[in-house]
Each structure stands twice: as structure tokens, then as C-alpha cells.
Image (tube, rainbow, N blue to C red; front, side, top):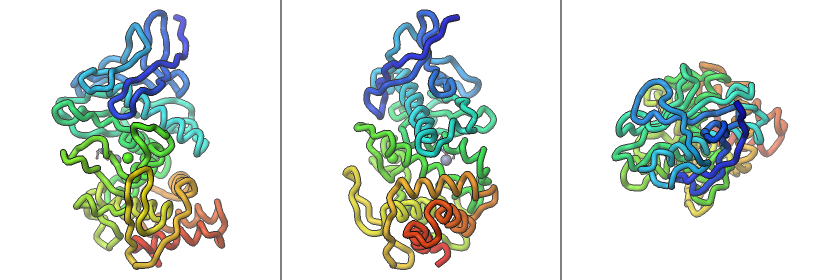
Length: 333
Ligand code: ASN
Ligand code: ZN
Ligand code: CA
């Protein structure tokens, strides 16, 4: 059977009209990304197991921009997976989650009014619910990149999903999820240090998480403390998200892409940011070459300092910024 890689058009829920890489098989187009390891996007159509059906059709146009068209969320998921693939390849030289050039797959329309998205190691796939009322599928760029990054963590550091390592696992997905959103340069979904701001999960327009000051969500912690390993991993991620913000942008007030931030420090001392690009290199290198399954916050400090030392030298401004940013979230001094 004759197959060809094509560039179709996605009318997404969150990211406007975007190019999607697809595959043409005879007269049928499929949401199979022929340029990124064959990553496929499936429609579960409210099922909760298996793969449902591969999105396919007689033309290479996907969705209409609204969630009521079932292809729309598929277009978001396919786009988010492609952006994440491209980010890891172009920014970190990694060819797919496992580094083997093989794609994972995505499933949308999971269950009924399911207000979550998740990565699964057993299917090596990511899955998205429609949210309540089918009005807000969980398919924004940052959420897609967050879930796909759980796959990366599970084949690299393998951070155990509980205790402090669980918080670091979650933070890794938020940190690199935000990095992918920035890298996309999408005018409908601009980069920010907020997670899930498009989903409207709280019903009042607030995001799921804030990296500059994680406690703004009412549950996450800004700073490390000795009992942080016993809270939910989506809240114990706070200090690491906060670290990453401080390392990238520095402490104090700042507006980026129209979003205002004001990041405090635990010790009251200022942190001078080194820019997101360098902070991303440090976190990725630490994740893939320093962190282990049991890395805790103290270990994350050691690992990111080692990574910064290798990348920029131990007498560099970057190395000092890593020290200062960890001190800013009450890890080390
Ligand atoms: N969306 C959540 C996450 O990726 C799902 C979960 O907690 N299992 O962390
Ligand atoms: Zn997560
Ligand atoms: Ca975001």
C-alpha cells in the first residue's frame, strides 16, 4: 500500500490553525505523523481502554476549532506531540522519548467528562479527557508536553512518583511543558510560566499552576520544608517549579508575553536569572544524567549544580545562579 507523508491543516481548540504532519494511504488521510516516529492520534470516543479508532478521513483538514467537532481535540493532541518531539530533538538532541526515533501515541476523548490527562508507561501513550461538559478538553500545548515529558522521565531518571522524587517528577513535566509552550511560538497559545491556563479547570480562568509563585494556586508550596515529601506530588513540585522560574527569570516583578509575574525568595535575597534557554539545558542534563529514581530536593540541587558545572564551569555566573535559585526556595544555602 502506497503511503506518503503530508502536511495537513489542524483547526485546534487552543492553538488556532496549525500545520499537522499526517500520512496519506491511498485516498485516506490519517493522523499518523510520518515525520516523527509514526506518532498516531486516536479517538477513544468516550471509551476508556484500547485505542478506539485512528483519526482518518478523505481530506487533510482536522477539526473546526471547537470541541464539539471531535477532530479538534485530536488536532491539538497531534500538534502538541509534534511540538514536544521537535523541542526535544532541536533543543536537546533527543530523537523521541526513548531516543530511538520511535513515536508514542495519543488518545483523546477518554471517558465521560473526564477532567484530566495522563501518561501511561504500560501503553507508552498519553491520554486526554474532554473536561466537564465537553467544553474544555485537556489538550493544550503545555498539558500535552507535560504528559509526554512523564514518558521521558520514566525512561531516564525514573523518579519515583511519591515523596520528594514525585514532586521532582511533576516539576520536570511542568518545567519542560512550559519550555515546549514557549518554543512553539504559537500566537494563540503564547509561552508562559503557567500550567493549564487554557483549560479553565477551576472555572474562573485561573491556571492549574503558577511557577513564579506556586502558592498562588492555594495548595502548592513555594519553598522546601522537611515534610514536603508527604503532600501530593502536584503540590510538592512547587519548590522545583519556583527554582526553575528564579533561575530563568530572576526574582521580583517581570512581565513576559503579557503575563505579570512576581517571584519571591525564601531568603529574601535577589536572584539574577540566566534566561530560560540555559535553565532548560541545566534541568534536562540533570534529569538525563544526574537524577536517579530516589533523587530528593537536596539531590536535585547537587545534580543541577553538577550539570551547570559541566555546561558552564563551576566559576560561572550560571553555576552561581543555580546556587542562588535553590537558596531562594530554601534548598541548601
Ligand atoms: N495530569 C496528571 C499528571 O500528569 C495525571 C495524574 O496525576 N495522574 O500528573
Ligand atoms: Zn504530571
Ligand atoms: Ca502555559
